[in-house]
Figure 1 (cartoon, helix red, strand yellow):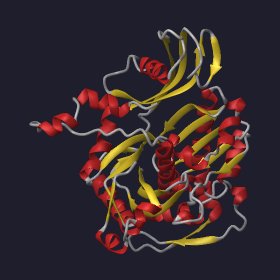
Figure 2 (tube, helix red, strand yellow):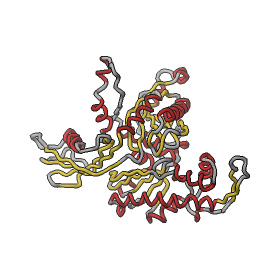
Figure 3 (cartoon, one colour):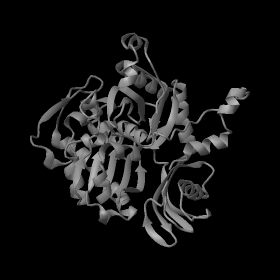
Figure 4 (spheres, helix red, strand yellow):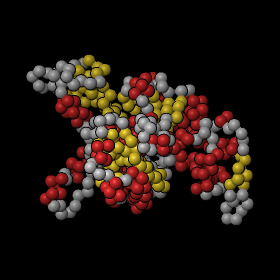
Length: 440
């Protein structure tokens, strides 16, 4: 949960602890993307599981490439701008955030672990489950990679499989099939350093497609089977759910920025104009164009403006979108669950705003398709403002924090001459990295 301070103006307005009565916890989700940085401040109402959005901050992102930090200073400035906007709008001083991580360095694979149940009653406890999950972490990884998430798939007790919650059951031998998500140590460290230099702390680091699922998928969809395709600026993120459990994750570096680059090169215009043209006139499929209107784009270097039709622009965009969706379909098939997705596909992220993308996705995948819009914040606060696919990760980070409110992991840098207090608060680098990357 987010530690926070009220700004001076809010302190003058609030009396007798009325604000504390209204909200028991404040959470800040920070989506550090390739094209934008977004900070969303939300508060949980006391005595309720509902959240109220208090503030939104957004700034252009120039320091990332395909989801990975490539320029620390530019990323820090983008984070500061977004956070300052969110602070001004919410009246809350942000001190720590839950952050998403993406990039084509993310890898996932299945593994399993086995433990014996040693207590006299042979009753499985939560400690036994934690011991089993710790056992699954003892896998050989390259020195430059660390575990981000350990996600249990099912448990096997004395040969009986298909168990989702073994606590309280009796057994002698317990096994677990788990989904392991790993990432580059340096990529995570750079995200942490950017947040720290912006004046905040990281309370948790969460895989972005996992976070987005908390914003746009409901429990029924996860139960009957659904694939989430989050089309961001630098990466497209895939998460496959079945039986209420995340079964497969994947990320690849074909996304919105590549589409913008295609428009830039195809029309001979600068990147900012290409992004505007894509958003205002872009279609992913010719049949989605109701009226083939003509629009003007400015000439470069004093040249005359050009007239371009929507159909011509679609001819540039559609091949890249087909490639993206075919890559996504290949990942869904690789998961082994493509035949079990009764709920089909949910498209979200800024790329899901492209007109006709749902029709194209249906044509390529043959599955039902819908656009995923963040929900679950009721009618209060700034809920209407975040009901947009481009905010799926930021909103999902808040949803993830709500469900995992008892988990707070912070990675801090080691100083050369730590004080006694620092020594008591900080573990060794290896210990802190292990804590940082472990996730049930």
